[in-house]
Length: 67
Image (tube, rainbow, N blue to C red):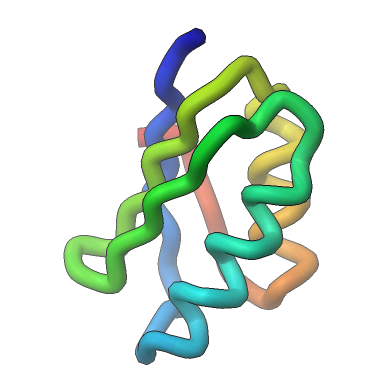
């Protein structure tokens, strides 16, 4: 198992964090996703494809890049 960290921009509230967390949790290979509003980071535990993670965040309306 490895950890992937993404910097996420556009989140402004707890609802945003919840939406991103749920989207990341649905990506194949994700064991757990921890998303924080400040400083706008997500730490994903598991063996997921980074592109799939970024696309899942984008579908929720936010921008994610590897950090």
